[in-house]
Length: 283
View (cartoon, rainbow, N blue to C red):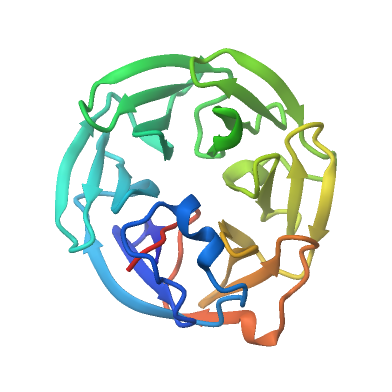
């Protein structure tokens, strides 16, 4: 199951692959990843759409729920039946990126001068802590949980770097991006293992995998036209959205080297996908 935010349509799209991968309903992603077939996804099936009240700015999936950042300043929660808990978490601004881990929701908040990172409990819905993120608060950022280290990786596109935080807001290190990336590259970023991220650079027409240890370029692929939304597939693949005029395609790349898996992994879809994607196990 893969939830894809489409801000232009104001819906959250729920998709499943056609390979029969979703076999462990209700289990956590890290628990079922070892049981997923290693074949790449070769198609998508439309399951349902869930309408929201306003523009969807961000999306993530966690333990059976989809969390959606709303332009109105709140996080909605959607269950597997499509029921929406509106304003499940109330915010004071727009959450331009969200991620969930350890029963907590991490939100990167919009700000005209600086952004902020908020951490909320998913049980009490209360804010646990908050800190400033030194970056112009536009939409060119993403937030990634480094689960093995209990750390956050947050894009800072003004300085072309990724800042690694502890879960209490302390700066662990600042990782410079490869010089070849443009300033808007961090608009679309996803984790890829514990020590790297995959990034879509739409202006340069490249998809890259970057080390979070030293910023080195692990691989670069220039075969995806106008790369956009990107997400790491737990079976070892990277799904990348390509939007060109009225032709929207999802490319599937091998996480090890960035090569196309094969021609059947070019998946045609009929709607325009946004820049925020989240992989969701289960059906």
